[in-house]
Length: 485
Image (cartoon, rainbow, N blue to C red; front, side, top):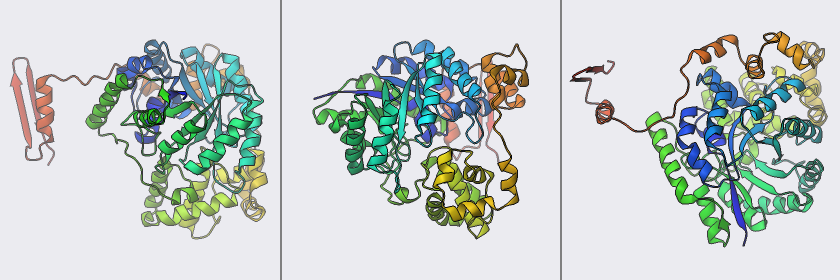
């Protein structure tokens, strides 16, 4: 049977899905050399959203993160996800170029590329930019469920993707919407139309079916599977490497990965999760409603928060139902960033306002104007589009023209001729205050779980609810802890 290779998503999609992108550079460094030694085909490291999160909340330099990890991952290509850099705004071509250039300069070697519409022109632009800076492109075919996302649709889009001559394609299922049956049908169609280009599968576990989908794909001839390591597997993340590899072996295939060497990585990350109070991924229950609203797992909590803010926290189920209608009205966009956010936010507003499209977000108006792709405006329900565009705000937004500045003009706007590429990218994405706070923070250091016995004792005592006061004294050390209240 076939040799099965694996792409690791633990330190990118794993903690994005389960830890809200809260894994620090130090945590990554504590396992980087063992990930590199395991024999992965590639290791995903970050995306545009990770850059902003690292600076804003972790006070870490994202470029330094790449350099530090790359200094320990020397055999395995590090991979970045390339979609929109600024999620909800216009992305000038020069800044898309600068994003991938900064990634390549820091140590990234591959780019997994998405266009939210599976659009040939969007793919062509990003593939060209990645090749220009020396990144190997992997092109996503994003899966969705709707009347227009048929096998014929995916056959056509696969042929278009293959026409770009990329070294690899990826069947990407961000919502965990594939089933074993649809996987069998779709993988066959994609392999038949891929012109011999190798295909990966990337299927989330939101409906609990991700591991089964991977096995179906393997049986049909896909030999590269995206997985994650526990505790950052399952749930809304990717399938567990251990589960997929062991089942693939039971089916007669040979996993080309050092499973035993990776168990210590999984143990390390589990201990980090327990110490930091991070969630541990568990196999998800099957939920048919996911196929109706198709909201990605991480977005459901945001939708609930929007409703709670206005005192409607008990109407989440109604908002999810409304999401189904809004998605149909908007022409069945693929529920992936940023389109899924447009649909979910508008559904929440419809529920809050008590009437569909009584109030409309600027993003939905821009969507109706075609500013997020020609296909958006063409696919919308005509009556809904007319209602959205009949408001004064639509006339204001219709006058907007994209500003395609050169890199030199952007550098002049955001700091002057001496501003480095990395600094320019940060200034475009973030505020001066956010960058300054990051610069003032101490540099990252490897996360260690080793503890002095005294530290262990104090930590265990602090967990006791019946102890309100802890006092420790020894030569050179004095520590007093009081529980509030």
